[in-house]
Length: 596
Image (tube, rainbow, N blue to C red):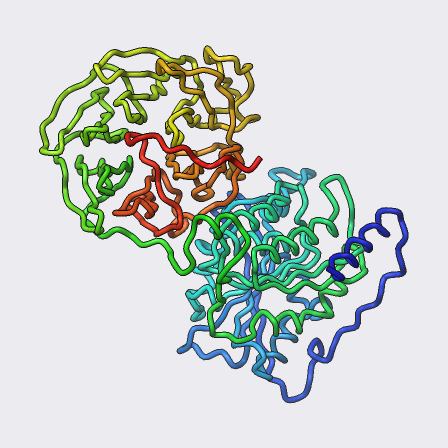
């Protein structure tokens, strides 16, 4: 509490304009050349990128004299590389030489990259500078650039480790946010981050990282943050406040982090001075892997995920996976549309073919009688009894998704026409809403009193349903709408309700699948992860996607309905949880009162 009070007081003094003269930070002996210390070699090269079309950049490689081509070397990448590789600035080659010689960091190859520039197309024109585009936003594109272009190119000449535990990344200002986002998006590829005066402000949305740290299950990364109390305060935010926010978020989620606060502005003087100590801290106890916290106060960790339980791929012979659903026994069905089969995973985890040569499947659901409902892409709705008997229920309606309540009543979405349909247990069909732009997936709450309808983001499209929601651009509202289910099965009071995290670089929502648990929490698959919303519509936590592949459908299954199943690419994954699923075809379950 004393530290927090001191930091808050410091912020108060800054806000009223009371500042002291900035301290001068001196370089330590580790930043100077010493006789007898082997010197590494720096070579330069240029790179033209495919992921950032038209860009060219200057690059440098530092190789320590202790490098042995028979052994994989660790790697550290520096953004704005020209300032770090110079022996008159951060002096990274000198610091590396000294620390590697003293065995205070492993044998490490340094890669120094300047941001990309698109040269002008004619005399007198300006180049296009890619620095902010590459560094300041959220998303995995810059990380892909490193993993798909730069590391393979350097790896042609040098033996680089493929283990993320042996890779670190560093940058200052916008380069600091770039370093963090690479490790955040791909902790399997980069585990150690050094950010100096990092730009965690709203230049391109990176102020969201502190919120994501609090909501996302912890990742195996180690973070060193350096900031100055007199750092800049401009249109996009305060660097000092945003770095404080990052520090408190890392603390809340129990990350392995280090925080160093100085009193300078937006410069690298303190960062240069503490660089040797930061590297020693980052590489301490290598090659031991970075440990995840055993417990955190995050709702996702206290109420959903089990410590030590990760994703496991479901073994089986299939080429694609989609449209998960679960029956009363905890058996999970899914479609393999490449081979036109429907497969079943037993409650114990074995897999078998349930139906062959069925055509392309859009959605699966279970009825109270235990029948399997299948919505096909060719506009057929078919029921399969447990003994395999097939019965046609409907033909002609383009159904994208469906769910069945405990009365056997079916709710279905028709994205081609923006319709939501209702089928009674006797087969009567009724249009419940129309003109619902981007209508997609559908789910019932555990008490079956609310219907949740997902809408895929469509630029400029608006909700034009028959309900009382005003026409608004979908890009400006949450894209999961809540309807109240009336006693006659009709829908009322639609409201865009759930506020999901948007993938910054994709520009669309990608909320593909939904499931609910007995507490009324909603699980939504997405590019960002499986987003877990409370009854009030807020994302309380985000479960990481398996192997960084976007998830497309989700259900609870297993004998106790406490295993979360998702589809991601061609695979099905499962993960044991503390939660228990609520299946829509079973008797309604009244969840506890929400925390408002």
